[in-house]
Image (cartoon, rainbow, N blue to C red):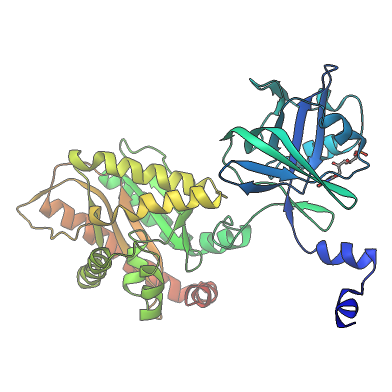
Length: 411
Ligand SMILES: Cc1cc2nc3c(=O)[nH]c(=O)nc-3n(C[C@H](O)[C@H](O)[C@H](O)COP(=O)(O)O)c2cc1C
C-alpha cells in the first residue's frame, strides 16, 4: 500500500519537460552513410560517455524518428561535437531535408562517415547494442577512435536556446572596463612616449581591470622596438604576473594572488620574497639573457594564448600551468653600478593619490648588456613619470574612476 502511494505519478508531461529543461546539454551531430549511399545526420542532445573499458558512448533517439531509422542502418557513425559558433550548422542539420549536406562543409572519415568542418571533437564509433527505453532507445556505440580537432568551447542547448560555456575568469575585458582603463592611462601618455623614444624601447601603461586581470591600456615604441602587444588584451594577474600591483596591496589581495600560484612551499616562499624586494626597491625587474630566452618565449606564447580567449577550461589550465612554472625565472636581483644586465622588463607601480596601486609603467624590448648605472637611470625615469602621474590623478578628476576601480580590486 505504502509502495503504491510512493509510485503514484504526481506530475504531467509538461512538468516533466519543464523540470528536465533546467538541465543543459551539449549538442552533437551523429552522422553516417546509409547503404543506399546517402549521408545521414541527426542532431542529438542526449549524448553521453558511458564506459572506458570497453570504450562505449551512447545517445537516445526517439522510437518514432525517421532519421534514426536510417542512421541505425549505417555501418559506422561519427559523433561530431559542435562548437559554440556552430548553432547555424545545428539548425541546418536538425530540420528534415534532402540537401542538409549541401549546406554545410564536410569530408569523409576513413571509416566512411561524414565529418563536419569545424567541429570540436570527433568520436568514430559503431552501433553495438540498443535498449528500448519507453518512447526512446538507448543506443550504445563501441568507440573505434576519437580526437579533438578544434579545442574551443562547445555549443550548449538549454531551455530551447543555444549558448556557450563562459566561466568567470574566461570572459574578455568588457568595453566599459577598457574605457575606464583608457581614462586612467591617458595620464601616462606623454611619459611613455618620451621614455620609449629616449631609451629606444617599448614603454606601456598597464591597468588592472579587476582582481584577476589587467590590460595594456597604452603603449609607445622607440628605436628598433616593434609593436608586440594588442591594446586591451587580457593579461592574468597570476603569479608571477602582476607582482607590482600586489606588492603594495592589502594582505587579502596578496593572499588571493598567491593562492593562484603553484601549491608548493618553495614557490610560495619565492613569491613572498619577490614581493618584499619590490616593496623595498619600488620596482620590479626581470632578467633574460641567452639561457633564459626560450623560457621567456614560452611565457609570451602562454600570455598570447590567454589573450586570444575565451579558452576552453583545459587550455586555460595548460596556459596557467606554463605561467606558474615561470616562478624561478622571476628572481630578485640587485642592480649594482658596476654590473652589466640583460633585462626583459622593468615595471614600477603608479600610486593612486590615496596610496593604492591601479596602474603600472613598464619598459620592455630593452637594449641588452647594459651597465648598472644606466639601468638605474631607466628606473629613475620610470619612477619620476609614475610620481607625476600620481599627482595628475589627484588634480584632474580621474579620482572618481579610480575609486570605482578600487572597489573591484579590493574584492
Ligand atoms: C539541440 C537538439 C537536440 C536534440 N536531441 C535529440 C535527441 O536526443 N533525440 C532525438 O530523438 N531527437 C533529438 N533532436 C531532434 C532531432 O535532431 C531531429 O530534429 C528529429 O529527429 C527530427 O527528425 P525525424 O523526425 O526524422 O527524427 C534534437 C534536436 C535539437 C535541435
